[in-house]
Amino acid sequence: MFGWIRRGIANALDRRRNSRDTAPRAFQDLSRELRELAEIASRVWPEEKSFQNRIQNIRDEMDQLDELTSKPEFRLLPLKKRLELRESLLHSKTQLMDTVSTAPPPTTRPQ
Image (cartoon, rainbow, N blue to C red; front, side):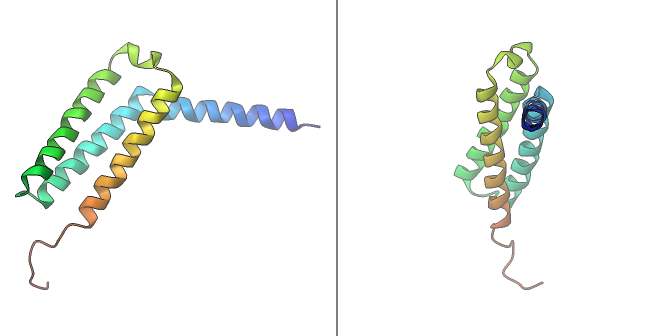
């Protein structure tokens, strides 16, 4: 009997969560986290040139994302695109964390 109320509340909560997750501030926070992880990852393999190039690309893309989210036009992007961008950023964050956690130890000597 009250299923429509429950569905309405669930829909309102979903819209609120999506709005919070796709707000420009949320993307700026994610880009800051990715930039920090990229900095950590760059210290893991400082000698590997191709890896350092990828890290630099990540930094550049996060700078572009910050610039994009600071513009009012960002809110005009469709919700679906912003959700896809968020998922992509979260996937990149997971990959960077895996990279850092699987890094070889800096020395062969046991500590």
